[in-house]
Length: 405
Image 1 (tube, one colour):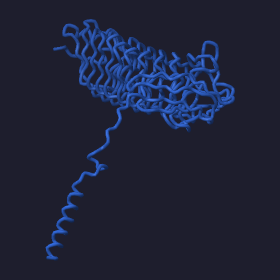
Image 2 (image 1 turned 60 degrees about the vertical axis):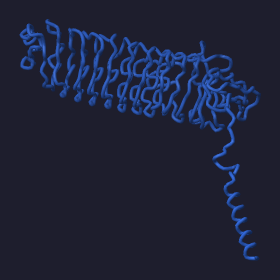
Image 3 (image 1 turned 30 degrees about the vertical axis):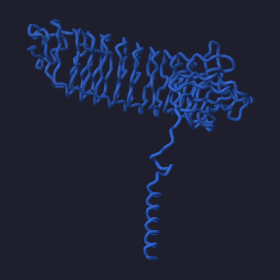
Image 4 (image 1 turned 180 degrees about the horizontal axis):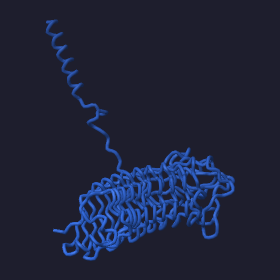
């Protein structure tokens, strides 16, 4: 009888253990509590050692927000903008910046020494008497206001005399009140990233000249003019996407960008200067918009790896050294009736399989060396073969001139 009782008791205990183990643990992964739906974000402002108060902003998820103007003070120091970290190593925002937040944010006031920035009549920003590059943070928001004056542009400098040659600063953001960056504004700076404002219409001559570390830049849809030598020697840039607002690209604008692999040029562009893409060693393909009817001097000079160039417009003239030393060029699409060809225009285009000219009157060859260091056949209208062979400077290539079939 005792054995039976013991066996029954063991069985009941085992059954209870099984029932307990089968009971769902309320903290198990299969029973996660329902998370509340986030419908709005809060943006708070921290004086970061300064004084004053600013009300927080509340914005619905997915909505754009415009920051309040910075009202904090900190002795004689200048307020320039905001950072997501108190030590200025986070993301930077300019005063009254607009963006779409993706979470709650605390923005810390960014301070620079007194008189770092000054302003001239008309809101032209310049260096102040207290400007010292080594005292600036690695990530710097430029001020929208100096005192009560709104900044509209950066003062013009000159080659070798940049207004802001930033050696310590690596990233800058410019306020949406700026419409123009003055000549050579950041020449020879060590900046690697630039946030351009949506208000910008012009980047003047040499603004980022030889900023060797500059790699991150995007362009606002308001930009119309890219001046000469703006990105000259910016070797770290690999890709450029120009907005459809751009109308003019200056001479040498992207020259010597040795690591530039891709550039997208919109149909809105109606002017391109000389040497604009010369010595862009890694470019492989470029399409030039239809409003360009003449190939500027040295446009693609020494673009050693470029393979395809297409001109959508009706080309009438080809400048000096336009394609010289494009040794990998295999496809060149030239529409229109070319009437003049500059010296050394196709010098060294050793991979080009042929060239075809459609005019019955031979184009003017400025010099006898237009096709030197090449071997491709030159096709012309059948009725004009002898005229081409006899024309001034064309006679140098008489053996290569053939009738178009």
